[in-house]
Length: 216
Image 1 (cartoon, rainbow, N blue to C red):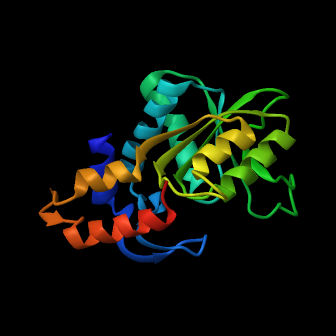
Image 2: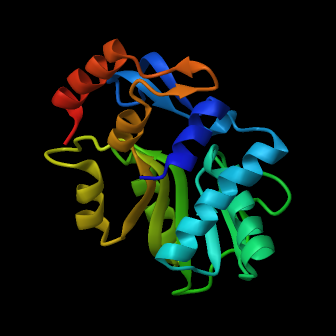
């Protein structure tokens, strides 16, 4: 469990509670979106969490973030690795649409050499759709995806079992999360953050009901 990271997400509004419809169509009582962390100081702290997890689990020369929310994560984490930890690295992200003018590139940043290791980072893992797409893009360039680092693992079902486990089995890529959603709810249940209890008994019950249907 990482209480500092959990409290950071709540204070920044990156972990929200309510009624949300996910990309998968599932109705969820919570939502994770690090895209709302848009201040310099907030992004600096967020990048620090990702950089430390990268150092803990194994570095690589390039940090890749999928468009759009992965873009600031990759850039900021790369800066944090270099500035705070002295690790030389580069960043890379994809364009949603290939540029039709200038260099007409599909990517921005340093392209990997054949067989070069890349770390893929993103804010949340639900069913893994965008992660599979990113792996395909990187492997098509000849890169080796060393690991996937995610902010929050929603611990949900994929096709037949845990989505993260399915991703590992299909891609042979290790997955490391800074926090798991079950830890977030257990830590926040009844706890006041900045004078407010975000996870009430009612919300916790809704979370458990959601977990019973979609969790693993």
